[in-house]
Amino acid sequence: TTTLPDGRVEDHGISDDDIKRYQGYFERDTDAVINVSTLLRSLPARAAVDNKAPHVSKFPPCLVIGASRDFIVDRAGVEETAVFFGLDRPLFVDSPHDVMLGGNWKNGAEAIHNFVQSKVKAAN
Image: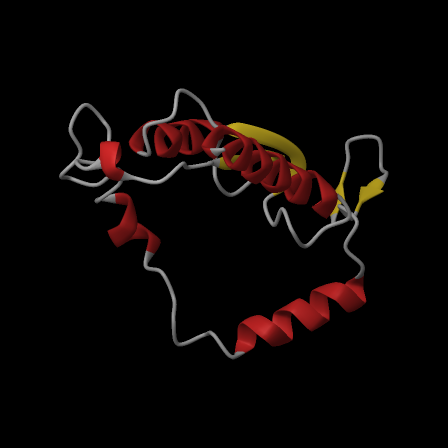
């Protein structure tokens, strides 16, 4: 939860029970952690050419989704990721960082659905 300047509490559509359940899921993954300080030294990949993946032309259609209310991955990081995958820009949805876990999960699901539908239509 986040306490807003006016004193209201924003839970981002996630109840305390949901958080406990999700934490239980993550508990079993504690051996597989990301050392962010090491990761940051290699982003974007050192093999990038003009900030793009070296074989980006061989990639299947890509979608990079950012969350407009993300306090973990900033907008610049999402935009760099989109460029790395050969996109002009990412798609931002109204959501906190854990796009598919909160009350706004449909925003992320609809974005993915629309992307897949557009690629299927384009392929036919």
